[in-house]
Image (cartoon, rainbow, N blue to C red; front, side, top):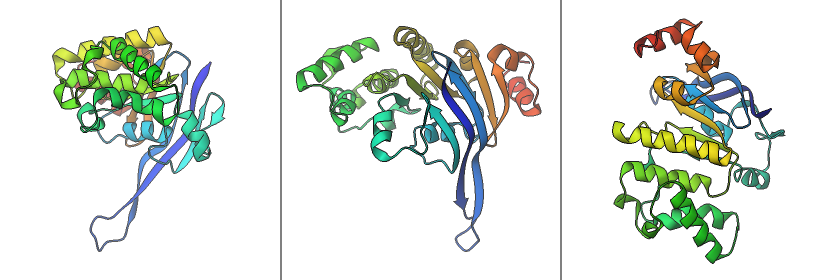
Length: 259
């Protein structure tokens, strides 16, 4: 059963080539449609600038879509009022590409992970602190380091902190935007394995946004390939990678030595 249904998603921006020129419309996302089944790991892949990150941000309305539909658990997200949207964000969270810039450097790690619980008024102080300890342990961090600041952690550890923060509200749907692209190769496999373990353990539905085809092939059951804001190929990962139909998909796979 589909947990996520995206139909004809469009996001446009108005740009000027120069301050004195007339604005022109750029379609960053141009009629994108896909579904994600409950418990599935779905990949959205493409080069930088293809529109995949904008797509993910539109789904959570971190960027407001221009048009289209996003149905989550049978509810249309793009027309939700502010109060209902806030409640929805307990069920849908995002892990950002760069853990260094997405974590407030002035906040201690424990406070970062706890922040969502406070915003949504969940639990008393002692219960929240216990929840933070549990979450840090869940992502493989020592809970005794909760009083430290993000700069005192490595890049891989900061990404684990971002994961703990995203999981604090027990979301059903997690968007992972280039979750390992900013990490050393030696650390990437650890984070990928952690994501897969958490998905199985917690029953998460994942949208993995990536340009790394090997990552997508390894963990995603289905994949959609984006190019210039549109989906060129979509389907089971093995079929898309084994028999690409669009010239762009063929060229992309060829550049990675996949075909």
